[in-house]
Image 1: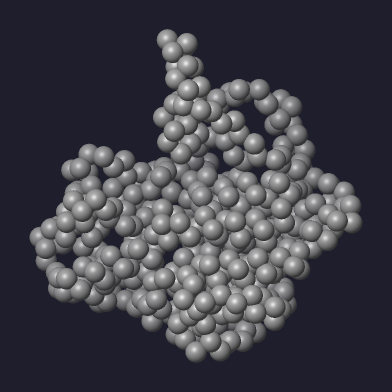
Image 2 (image 1 turned 180 degrees about the horizontal axis):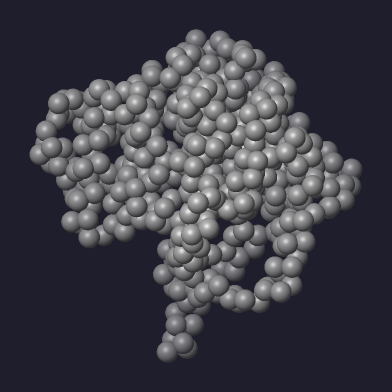
Length: 471
């Protein structure tokens, strides 16, 4: 049995590499080279044979190299710290946060095409980056945006499937139902039933994945309109990009809200492979379940309170502070409220992370957006106070490895400011975003021929006996 240890050693090695002089001046060549004039699929066709050989060489030359050791704590503690998945599209460092194909969030904001000069990155640009490792041109992003629009139509039976549910059903339940209904169109299932060669698995997976990414904003926006508004569908605006169109179909056309949605979708798209939704999507897909089935499973993981539902809980908690103490709460009153929350046996939502040990860069870029567009908003000012108050209290408790705010600590307040106040819907926004990362990796799973996931499990008795014999 190959044993794995914490990612910390790998992260430290990566950090040392990142600090070398020739990389300080520019990000690694592969990650920063501009994409050529080819379309996205053509670029993948060119890259896949090279990456297949790369993986083959890695396995043949280093397949028996051990990456560390497993401890009992890891086995019973949610496999935290184990290195056990191949995930090409992003890598999470405990200290510096997420990197998309080697690029940090600030770097993505600088180099990825935007809808306007100095604007937030377009999600289509990140999709191109995740799939190819290359920064696309604005023309390539516009072409991809058009391709996604052409794939975005929703069959009537999808709406009928959603309408069969009570309007009171949680928005995530309705969203997942819509995704499952889309599965009827799966190109991968049709190709597999016809006996497609393994070497071609990635091709219908690519089609399914882009179709799914293209369609989920319309499905998600219908759920929002059905639950919280008049139920009328707002059609796609062909002049808008992916993120802006999502905002438009929800019913929000403020230019600043369009920019927020571009940023939101981009930074929530991927967070390496070990989180619940990403791992679930990868696990289910490893059984050759098509992208629709795999992503629907991922959404069900995202809907959990310890994962994507947390962004809903943050805004509700912040509003409970305002309801009890008012918007002009003092620092001392806020400290008392935080202690009250903790002493009641609850956690402070929006703080801490399973991997990160510093402030989440996704929180930081949202804070910068707020400072630029809504500096006087009372809820934003409350979030800023929480940033000062909560970490010292959590450190005082002595039980928290990371007392710093995560992505969920900020997103709800921004959405609330522009009128999207329905906290129960927030996880659906997260789900739309996550389609980009999960589907990008799924395409590479099939291109690289990654194996069925099947880790070993043990009983408590096995652990007890093993530990006794190990002494």
